[in-house]
Length: 481
Image (cartoon, rainbow, N blue to C red):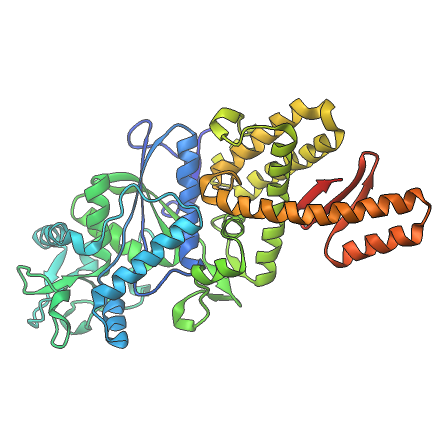
Protein backbone atom coordinates (compact mmCIF):
# COMPACT_ATOMS: atom_id res chain seq x y z
CA UNK A 1 0.00 0.00 0.00
CA UNK A 2 0.96 3.63 -0.50
CA UNK A 3 1.43 5.72 2.61
CA UNK A 4 -1.64 7.92 3.09
CA UNK A 5 -1.68 10.96 5.39
CA UNK A 6 -4.34 13.42 6.48
CA UNK A 7 -3.72 16.92 5.13
CA UNK A 8 -5.08 19.85 7.14
CA UNK A 9 -5.52 22.03 4.05
CA UNK A 10 -7.65 19.62 2.03
CA UNK A 11 -9.07 17.96 5.17
CA UNK A 12 -8.66 14.60 3.44
CA UNK A 13 -6.48 11.55 3.81
CA UNK A 14 -4.54 11.31 0.58
CA UNK A 15 -1.61 9.37 -0.90
CA UNK A 16 1.78 10.68 0.13
CA UNK A 17 3.86 11.53 -2.93
CA UNK A 18 7.27 12.97 -2.04
CA UNK A 19 8.71 15.94 -3.87
CA UNK A 20 11.84 13.93 -4.66
CA UNK A 21 11.46 10.21 -5.18
CA UNK A 22 12.87 8.26 -2.24
CA UNK A 23 13.40 11.31 -0.04
CA UNK A 24 11.20 13.06 2.52
CA UNK A 25 11.65 16.50 4.08
CA UNK A 26 9.74 17.15 7.32
CA UNK A 27 9.63 20.32 9.40
CA UNK A 28 7.80 20.48 12.68
CA UNK A 29 7.69 23.36 15.12
CA UNK A 30 9.80 22.79 18.18
CA UNK A 31 9.42 24.24 21.63
CA UNK A 32 9.38 27.91 22.55
CA UNK A 33 11.83 27.44 25.39
CA UNK A 34 10.34 29.62 28.12
CA UNK A 35 9.89 26.48 30.23
CA UNK A 36 10.65 22.75 30.25
CA UNK A 37 8.44 20.43 28.18
CA UNK A 38 5.28 18.82 29.50
CA UNK A 39 3.42 15.83 28.06
CA UNK A 40 1.41 18.07 25.77
CA UNK A 41 4.60 19.38 24.15
CA UNK A 42 6.33 16.04 23.88
CA UNK A 43 3.37 14.24 22.27
CA UNK A 44 4.21 16.06 19.04
CA UNK A 45 7.83 14.95 19.24
CA UNK A 46 6.76 11.32 19.70
CA UNK A 47 4.21 11.47 16.85
CA UNK A 48 6.73 12.79 14.34
CA UNK A 49 9.38 10.39 15.63
CA UNK A 50 7.06 7.49 14.75
CA UNK A 51 6.29 9.04 11.34
CA UNK A 52 9.99 9.34 10.67
CA UNK A 53 10.64 5.75 11.77
CA UNK A 54 7.85 4.38 9.57
CA UNK A 55 8.94 6.32 6.49
CA UNK A 56 12.52 5.15 7.07
CA UNK A 57 11.27 1.56 7.42
CA UNK A 58 9.49 2.01 4.08
CA UNK A 59 12.79 2.90 2.43
CA UNK A 60 12.71 6.70 2.41
CA UNK A 61 15.68 8.88 3.29
CA UNK A 62 14.14 11.25 5.83
CA UNK A 63 15.40 14.72 6.75
CA UNK A 64 13.61 15.97 9.85
CA UNK A 65 14.01 19.58 10.99
CA UNK A 66 12.67 20.74 14.36
CA UNK A 67 13.47 24.30 15.38
CA UNK A 68 14.05 25.83 18.79
CA UNK A 69 12.33 29.19 19.34
CA UNK A 70 14.85 30.81 21.68
CA UNK A 71 13.78 34.46 21.34
CA UNK A 72 10.19 35.43 22.05
CA UNK A 73 8.15 37.71 24.33
CA UNK A 74 7.46 34.93 26.84
CA UNK A 75 11.16 34.12 27.16
CA UNK A 76 11.96 37.78 27.84
CA UNK A 77 9.19 37.88 30.44
CA UNK A 78 10.57 34.75 32.13
CA UNK A 79 14.01 36.36 32.27
CA UNK A 80 12.55 39.38 34.08
CA UNK A 81 10.47 37.18 36.38
CA UNK A 82 13.48 35.04 37.34
CA UNK A 83 15.99 37.95 37.33
CA UNK A 84 18.16 36.09 34.85
CA UNK A 85 19.38 36.78 31.32
CA UNK A 86 16.73 35.74 28.78
CA UNK A 87 19.26 33.60 26.93
CA UNK A 88 20.07 31.66 30.13
CA UNK A 89 16.37 30.82 30.52
CA UNK A 90 16.22 29.71 26.89
CA UNK A 91 19.33 27.55 27.07
CA UNK A 92 18.30 25.82 30.29
CA UNK A 93 14.94 24.86 28.83
CA UNK A 94 16.47 23.80 25.52
CA UNK A 95 18.56 21.31 27.48
CA UNK A 96 15.41 20.12 29.25
CA UNK A 97 13.84 19.55 25.82
CA UNK A 98 16.81 17.46 24.72
CA UNK A 99 16.59 15.42 27.91
CA UNK A 100 12.90 14.77 27.21
CA UNK A 101 13.77 13.68 23.66
CA UNK A 102 16.33 11.25 25.03
CA UNK A 103 14.35 9.88 27.94
CA UNK A 104 11.35 9.04 25.71
CA UNK A 105 13.45 7.46 22.98
CA UNK A 106 12.99 10.09 20.25
CA UNK A 107 15.65 10.17 17.57
CA UNK A 108 17.36 13.58 17.49
CA UNK A 109 16.29 15.83 14.59
CA UNK A 110 18.49 15.81 11.53
CA UNK A 111 18.85 19.55 12.06
CA UNK A 112 17.72 21.62 15.03
CA UNK A 113 18.12 25.31 14.15
CA UNK A 114 17.72 28.10 16.70
CA UNK A 115 15.84 31.24 15.76
CA UNK A 116 18.64 33.46 17.06
CA UNK A 117 21.05 31.80 14.63
CA UNK A 118 18.99 32.75 11.57
CA UNK A 119 18.43 36.49 11.82
CA UNK A 120 20.05 37.17 8.38
CA UNK A 121 17.65 34.74 6.66
CA UNK A 122 14.72 36.28 8.53
CA UNK A 123 15.68 39.83 7.52
CA UNK A 124 16.01 38.74 3.90
CA UNK A 125 12.54 37.18 3.95
CA UNK A 126 11.00 40.30 5.55
CA UNK A 127 12.58 42.54 2.91
CA UNK A 128 11.24 40.28 0.15
CA UNK A 129 7.71 40.58 1.55
CA UNK A 130 7.99 44.37 1.72
CA UNK A 131 9.30 44.52 -1.85
CA UNK A 132 6.42 42.33 -3.08
CA UNK A 133 3.80 44.51 -1.40
CA UNK A 134 2.76 42.03 1.29
CA UNK A 135 4.37 43.75 4.28
CA UNK A 136 4.86 47.29 5.53
CA UNK A 137 6.87 49.23 8.07
CA UNK A 138 4.70 50.70 10.84
CA UNK A 139 4.34 54.49 10.33
CA UNK A 140 4.64 55.23 14.06
CA UNK A 141 8.43 55.00 14.14
CA UNK A 142 8.40 51.89 16.34
CA UNK A 143 10.50 49.88 13.90
CA UNK A 144 7.78 47.22 13.71
CA UNK A 145 7.12 45.49 10.38
CA UNK A 146 3.77 43.80 9.71
CA UNK A 147 2.37 41.31 7.24
CA UNK A 148 -0.64 42.76 5.44
CA UNK A 149 -3.21 39.96 5.63
CA UNK A 150 -5.61 41.64 3.21
CA UNK A 151 -2.88 41.86 0.59
CA UNK A 152 -2.71 38.05 0.45
CA UNK A 153 -5.97 36.65 -1.02
CA UNK A 154 -5.36 33.09 0.23
CA UNK A 155 -4.95 34.07 3.86
CA UNK A 156 -7.04 31.65 5.93
CA UNK A 157 -6.70 28.63 3.61
CA UNK A 158 -5.08 26.42 6.26
CA UNK A 159 -7.49 27.15 9.12
CA UNK A 160 -10.47 27.53 6.75
CA UNK A 161 -11.45 30.94 8.07
CA UNK A 162 -12.45 34.23 6.54
CA UNK A 163 -10.39 37.23 7.58
CA UNK A 164 -13.35 39.08 9.07
CA UNK A 165 -14.06 36.08 11.34
CA UNK A 166 -10.51 35.89 12.71
CA UNK A 167 -9.41 37.18 16.06
CA UNK A 168 -6.99 40.10 16.23
CA UNK A 169 -3.27 39.33 16.22
CA UNK A 170 -1.98 39.85 19.74
CA UNK A 171 1.74 39.68 19.03
CA UNK A 172 2.38 43.46 18.88
CA UNK A 173 0.88 46.83 19.76
CA UNK A 174 -1.95 47.44 17.27
CA UNK A 175 -1.32 51.18 16.95
CA UNK A 176 0.90 50.81 13.88
CA UNK A 177 -1.28 48.26 12.05
CA UNK A 178 -3.47 48.76 9.03
CA UNK A 179 -5.67 45.91 10.19
CA UNK A 180 -5.78 44.47 13.73
CA UNK A 181 -5.25 41.00 12.24
CA UNK A 182 -1.92 41.97 10.67
CA UNK A 183 0.90 40.15 12.45
CA UNK A 184 4.45 41.17 13.30
CA UNK A 185 7.34 40.09 11.10
CA UNK A 186 9.85 42.26 12.95
CA UNK A 187 9.49 43.89 16.36
CA UNK A 188 11.28 47.16 17.02
CA UNK A 189 13.38 47.33 20.17
CA UNK A 190 11.52 48.92 23.07
CA UNK A 191 12.79 50.85 26.05
CA UNK A 192 13.48 48.58 29.01
CA UNK A 193 14.11 45.49 26.89
CA UNK A 194 17.61 43.97 27.05
CA UNK A 195 19.91 45.18 24.29
CA UNK A 196 21.03 41.58 23.80
CA UNK A 197 17.52 40.72 22.60
CA UNK A 198 17.83 42.90 19.49
CA UNK A 199 19.69 42.91 16.19
CA UNK A 200 20.35 45.66 13.64
CA UNK A 201 17.94 45.88 10.72
CA UNK A 202 16.99 48.36 7.98
CA UNK A 203 14.16 49.51 10.28
CA UNK A 204 16.23 49.89 13.43
CA UNK A 205 17.26 47.46 16.14
CA UNK A 206 14.72 44.76 16.92
CA UNK A 207 13.99 41.07 16.91
CA UNK A 208 12.04 38.62 14.74
CA UNK A 209 8.34 37.93 15.12
CA UNK A 210 7.49 34.37 16.03
CA UNK A 211 5.92 33.28 12.73
CA UNK A 212 8.65 34.52 10.38
CA UNK A 213 11.28 32.49 12.23
CA UNK A 214 9.86 29.14 11.16
CA UNK A 215 9.30 30.13 7.52
CA UNK A 216 12.92 31.21 7.26
CA UNK A 217 14.35 28.15 8.99
CA UNK A 218 12.15 25.60 7.20
CA UNK A 219 13.09 26.89 3.77
CA UNK A 220 16.79 27.22 4.59
CA UNK A 221 17.13 23.55 5.50
CA UNK A 222 14.48 21.96 3.26
CA UNK A 223 14.22 24.36 0.33
CA UNK A 224 11.42 26.61 -0.89
CA UNK A 225 9.17 23.55 -1.30
CA UNK A 226 9.20 20.48 0.92
CA UNK A 227 7.01 17.53 1.81
CA UNK A 228 5.48 17.82 5.29
CA UNK A 229 5.03 20.59 7.82
CA UNK A 230 3.69 19.54 11.19
CA UNK A 231 2.92 20.46 14.75
CA UNK A 232 0.23 20.47 17.39
CA UNK A 233 -3.30 21.39 16.36
CA UNK A 234 -3.06 24.51 18.54
CA UNK A 235 -0.42 25.86 16.13
CA UNK A 236 -2.63 25.62 13.05
CA UNK A 237 -3.91 29.14 13.71
CA UNK A 238 -2.39 31.61 13.87
CA UNK A 239 1.16 30.26 13.71
CA UNK A 240 0.98 27.87 10.78
CA UNK A 241 -1.55 29.98 8.92
CA UNK A 242 0.90 32.88 9.12
CA UNK A 243 3.88 30.73 8.14
CA UNK A 244 2.05 29.53 5.04
CA UNK A 245 0.89 33.00 4.04
CA UNK A 246 4.23 34.75 4.39
CA UNK A 247 6.18 31.98 2.64
CA UNK A 248 3.78 31.80 -0.30
CA UNK A 249 3.55 35.59 -0.50
CA UNK A 250 7.35 35.62 -0.81
CA UNK A 251 7.03 33.36 -3.86
CA UNK A 252 7.75 29.96 -2.27
CA UNK A 253 5.48 26.90 -2.67
CA UNK A 254 6.35 25.90 0.92
CA UNK A 255 4.85 22.71 2.45
CA UNK A 256 3.02 20.25 0.20
CA UNK A 257 1.17 18.69 3.16
CA UNK A 258 0.26 19.81 6.68
CA UNK A 259 -0.05 17.37 9.59
CA UNK A 260 -1.38 18.27 13.03
CA UNK A 261 -1.55 16.11 16.12
CA UNK A 262 -4.28 16.61 18.70
CA UNK A 263 -3.73 17.87 22.23
CA UNK A 264 -3.14 16.22 25.56
CA UNK A 265 -5.78 17.46 27.96
CA UNK A 266 -6.20 17.10 31.69
CA UNK A 267 -9.58 17.50 33.29
CA UNK A 268 -10.98 18.44 29.88
CA UNK A 269 -8.64 21.43 29.51
CA UNK A 270 -5.61 21.95 27.30
CA UNK A 271 -2.43 21.02 29.12
CA UNK A 272 -0.51 24.27 29.48
CA UNK A 273 1.54 26.16 32.01
CA UNK A 274 -0.85 29.10 31.91
CA UNK A 275 -3.67 27.13 33.57
CA UNK A 276 -1.33 25.48 36.04
CA UNK A 277 -2.08 21.90 35.05
CA UNK A 278 1.05 20.92 33.21
CA UNK A 279 2.75 17.58 33.77
CA UNK A 280 6.44 17.99 33.12
CA UNK A 281 8.11 15.08 31.37
CA UNK A 282 10.86 15.17 34.00
CA UNK A 283 8.26 14.60 36.73
CA UNK A 284 6.11 11.99 34.98
CA UNK A 285 9.11 9.73 34.35
CA UNK A 286 9.74 9.67 38.10
CA UNK A 287 6.38 7.94 38.57
CA UNK A 288 6.32 5.82 35.41
CA UNK A 289 9.04 4.18 33.34
CA UNK A 290 9.90 6.31 30.29
CA UNK A 291 9.08 3.45 27.90
CA UNK A 292 5.63 3.15 29.46
CA UNK A 293 5.09 6.90 29.01
CA UNK A 294 6.09 6.59 25.37
CA UNK A 295 3.63 3.73 24.89
CA UNK A 296 0.88 5.87 26.45
CA UNK A 297 1.58 8.72 24.00
CA UNK A 298 1.93 6.39 21.01
CA UNK A 299 -1.12 4.20 21.63
CA UNK A 300 -3.81 6.76 20.71
CA UNK A 301 -4.27 7.91 17.12
CA UNK A 302 -2.33 11.14 16.65
CA UNK A 303 -5.48 13.01 15.56
CA UNK A 304 -7.42 12.02 18.68
CA UNK A 305 -7.35 13.92 21.97
CA UNK A 306 -5.62 12.28 24.94
CA UNK A 307 -7.31 13.10 28.25
CA UNK A 308 -4.57 12.41 30.78
CA UNK A 309 -5.13 10.56 34.02
CA UNK A 310 -2.89 8.53 36.28
CA UNK A 311 -5.26 5.57 35.82
CA UNK A 312 -4.97 5.72 32.05
CA UNK A 313 -1.19 5.93 32.29
CA UNK A 314 -1.15 2.93 34.63
CA UNK A 315 -3.36 0.92 32.26
CA UNK A 316 -1.07 1.78 29.34
CA UNK A 317 1.97 0.74 31.37
CA UNK A 318 0.36 -2.59 32.23
CA UNK A 319 -0.52 -3.23 28.58
CA UNK A 320 2.99 -2.47 27.38
CA UNK A 321 4.54 -4.57 30.11
CA UNK A 322 2.54 -7.58 28.94
CA UNK A 323 4.08 -7.14 25.50
CA UNK A 324 7.51 -6.56 26.98
CA UNK A 325 7.16 -9.57 29.26
CA UNK A 326 6.46 -11.79 26.25
CA UNK A 327 9.47 -10.43 24.35
CA UNK A 328 11.88 -10.97 27.22
CA UNK A 329 10.52 -14.40 28.12
CA UNK A 330 10.50 -15.60 24.52
CA UNK A 331 14.06 -14.35 24.06
CA UNK A 332 15.20 -16.21 27.17
CA UNK A 333 13.39 -19.46 26.30
CA UNK A 334 14.54 -19.59 22.66
CA UNK A 335 18.01 -18.17 23.24
CA UNK A 336 17.32 -15.74 20.40
CA UNK A 337 19.72 -12.87 19.81
CA UNK A 338 18.76 -9.46 21.14
CA UNK A 339 20.34 -7.88 18.03
CA UNK A 340 17.29 -7.01 15.93
CA UNK A 341 19.21 -6.82 12.66
CA UNK A 342 20.58 -10.31 13.22
CA UNK A 343 17.20 -11.61 14.41
CA UNK A 344 15.53 -10.61 11.15
CA UNK A 345 11.77 -10.76 10.80
CA UNK A 346 9.26 -8.42 9.23
CA UNK A 347 6.16 -6.50 10.21
CA UNK A 348 2.85 -8.20 9.44
CA UNK A 349 0.79 -7.07 6.42
CA UNK A 350 -1.94 -5.89 8.80
CA UNK A 351 0.54 -3.76 10.74
CA UNK A 352 1.90 -2.24 7.53
CA UNK A 353 -1.60 -1.49 6.25
CA UNK A 354 -2.48 0.25 9.51
CA UNK A 355 0.67 2.38 9.51
CA UNK A 356 0.13 3.29 5.86
CA UNK A 357 -3.39 4.42 6.74
CA UNK A 358 -2.51 7.78 8.31
CA UNK A 359 -0.48 6.17 11.11
CA UNK A 360 -3.39 4.19 12.53
CA UNK A 361 -1.35 3.03 15.49
CA UNK A 362 -4.25 1.65 17.56
CA UNK A 363 -4.93 -0.82 14.72
CA UNK A 364 -1.20 -1.52 14.37
CA UNK A 365 -0.93 -2.25 18.09
CA UNK A 366 -3.87 -4.64 17.84
CA UNK A 367 -1.72 -6.62 15.41
CA UNK A 368 1.12 -6.66 17.93
CA UNK A 369 -1.15 -7.82 20.74
CA UNK A 370 -2.65 -10.57 18.60
CA UNK A 371 0.81 -11.91 17.84
CA UNK A 372 1.74 -11.74 21.52
CA UNK A 373 -1.31 -13.89 22.35
CA UNK A 374 -0.17 -16.41 19.76
CA UNK A 375 3.34 -16.22 21.17
CA UNK A 376 2.18 -16.96 24.70
CA UNK A 377 0.43 -20.09 23.41
CA UNK A 378 3.68 -21.10 21.70
CA UNK A 379 5.53 -20.53 24.97
CA UNK A 380 3.07 -22.83 26.72
CA UNK A 381 3.57 -25.52 24.06
CA UNK A 382 7.27 -25.69 24.84
CA UNK A 383 9.97 -27.13 22.58
CA UNK A 384 7.63 -28.24 19.79
CA UNK A 385 6.71 -24.61 19.03
CA UNK A 386 10.21 -23.15 19.46
CA UNK A 387 10.77 -22.27 15.80
CA UNK A 388 7.32 -20.73 15.49
CA UNK A 389 8.02 -18.78 18.66
CA UNK A 390 11.21 -17.29 17.20
CA UNK A 391 9.25 -16.19 14.13
CA UNK A 392 6.57 -14.57 16.29
CA UNK A 393 9.18 -12.90 18.48
CA UNK A 394 11.02 -11.42 15.51
CA UNK A 395 7.81 -9.98 14.03
CA UNK A 396 6.75 -8.47 17.36
CA UNK A 397 10.13 -6.86 17.88
CA UNK A 398 10.22 -5.51 14.34
CA UNK A 399 6.85 -3.82 14.84
CA UNK A 400 7.81 -2.47 18.25
CA UNK A 401 10.99 -1.07 16.73
CA UNK A 402 8.95 0.99 14.25
CA UNK A 403 7.08 2.48 17.23
CA UNK A 404 10.26 3.09 19.20
CA UNK A 405 9.20 0.49 21.79
CA UNK A 406 11.51 -2.49 21.29
CA UNK A 407 12.53 -3.55 24.83
CA UNK A 408 16.05 -4.39 23.65
CA UNK A 409 16.64 -1.05 21.92
CA UNK A 410 19.62 0.79 23.50
CA UNK A 411 17.51 3.51 25.15
CA UNK A 412 15.50 0.91 27.11
CA UNK A 413 18.20 -1.72 27.63
CA UNK A 414 19.55 -0.48 30.97
CA UNK A 415 16.06 -0.26 32.44
CA UNK A 416 15.37 -3.76 31.18
CA UNK A 417 18.56 -5.05 32.77
CA UNK A 418 17.55 -3.53 36.08
CA UNK A 419 14.13 -5.08 35.88
CA UNK A 420 15.71 -8.39 34.91
CA UNK A 421 17.70 -8.36 38.15
CA UNK A 422 14.54 -7.57 40.09
CA UNK A 423 12.69 -10.41 38.34
CA UNK A 424 15.51 -12.81 39.17
CA UNK A 425 15.32 -11.94 42.87
CA UNK A 426 11.52 -12.07 42.86
CA UNK A 427 11.56 -15.31 40.90
CA UNK A 428 13.81 -17.00 43.45
CA UNK A 429 11.40 -16.14 46.28
CA UNK A 430 8.24 -17.03 44.33
CA UNK A 431 9.70 -20.31 43.08
CA UNK A 432 10.56 -21.32 46.66
CA UNK A 433 6.97 -20.69 47.76
CA UNK A 434 5.58 -22.54 44.75
CA UNK A 435 7.81 -25.46 45.59
CA UNK A 436 6.26 -25.53 49.07
CA UNK A 437 2.80 -25.35 47.49
CA UNK A 438 3.57 -28.19 45.06
CA UNK A 439 4.82 -30.38 47.90
CA UNK A 440 1.75 -29.51 50.01
CA UNK A 441 -0.53 -30.54 47.17
CA UNK A 442 1.41 -33.77 46.71
CA UNK A 443 0.88 -34.43 50.44
CA UNK A 444 -2.82 -33.55 50.01
CA UNK A 445 -2.32 -30.68 52.45
CA UNK A 446 -4.64 -28.43 50.48
CA UNK A 447 -5.05 -25.93 53.31
CA UNK A 448 -1.32 -25.12 53.18
CA UNK A 449 -1.35 -25.07 49.37
CA UNK A 450 -4.25 -22.61 49.34
CA UNK A 451 -2.60 -20.46 52.02
CA UNK A 452 0.59 -20.15 49.92
CA UNK A 453 -1.46 -19.21 46.89
CA UNK A 454 -3.38 -16.60 48.89
CA UNK A 455 -0.13 -15.14 50.25
CA UNK A 456 1.22 -14.79 46.73
CA UNK A 457 -2.02 -13.22 45.53
CA UNK A 458 -1.95 -10.71 48.40
CA UNK A 459 1.55 -9.72 47.22
CA UNK A 460 0.27 -9.19 43.68
CA UNK A 461 1.50 -12.49 42.26
CA UNK A 462 -1.10 -14.43 40.26
CA UNK A 463 -0.64 -18.19 39.94
CA UNK A 464 -2.09 -20.27 37.09
CA UNK A 465 -1.95 -24.06 37.16
CA UNK A 466 -1.24 -25.58 33.75
CA UNK A 467 -0.43 -29.12 32.51
CA UNK A 468 3.20 -27.96 32.26
CA UNK A 469 3.21 -26.79 35.88
CA UNK A 470 2.34 -23.58 37.68
CA UNK A 471 2.89 -20.19 36.07
CA UNK A 472 3.04 -16.94 37.92
CA UNK A 473 2.74 -13.33 36.85
CA UNK A 474 2.96 -9.86 38.33
CA UNK A 475 1.01 -7.54 36.03
CA UNK A 476 2.73 -8.28 32.74
CA UNK A 477 5.49 -10.54 33.94
CA UNK A 478 4.77 -14.22 33.47
CA UNK A 479 7.10 -17.00 34.47
CA UNK A 480 6.94 -20.78 34.47
CA UNK A 481 7.95 -22.73 37.51
